[in-house]
Image (cartoon, rainbow, N blue to C red; front, side, top):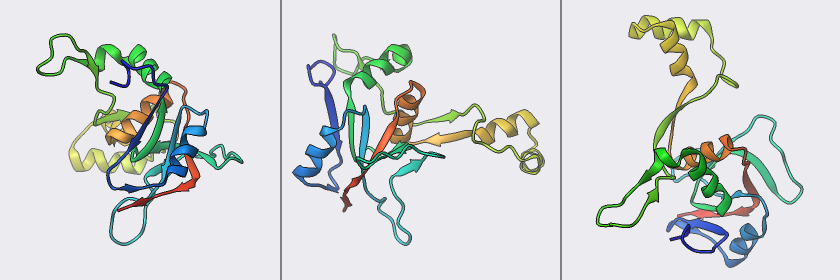
Length: 179
């Protein structure tokens, strides 16, 4: 429905996120393509933010921090991001929903593994040897496994945005409750 409209921004808000209208106005005010509000995962013990940081992030004076991944519980995405994902991966993510005769939709929210090019991943020889011995696998498979991560649907979307050159931002001034 969003892509068939003339809307410029899509704001995701999970049903268990407590937010204010001021926070909605703030997140919509940013010109950046992908911006999320800050909240913690629902868990016992140590609190963990629903984001994944970048080594040497860009930190803006307006409260935005560059991150690798951001939870979609309170995430604003500009239309251009969806259009560029379709342009790049449309053949892989297009599908016709059951019961429809004239509709193509896109799976922007895949759950998948992603193998990184090795940048930022230390391939320690002792770890490779341990995996080879424990699982009886080749050196190449062990090294590839080390560079491969399981990405939730939130992280998978952000990974695709990152691969297209979009930065993902966390707004430090939008602190939300995850009930």
